[in-house]
Length: 87
Image (cartoon, rainbow, N blue to C red; front, side, top):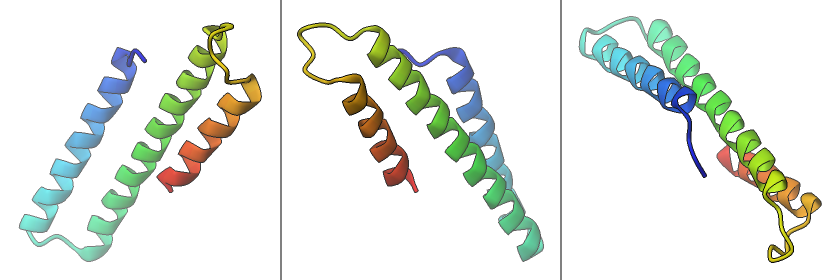
């Protein structure tokens, strides 16, 4: 699968968020503020997972051929399994 620049940019922003959380911890910031930033990072990761999985579904369905034994239903089930495992 090809990962476009939007995915890479999302991950770079998440990386920046995590570095910010580390800095907050090193500076002894308030627990509530650290947890808030960690929650924001987790949400960003969850959204990125969703984008990747949905892009993969579209790609798999559009590129399905006779040599691939997976049906559209199989592809969707596999995607749902990936999302469930990510939680």
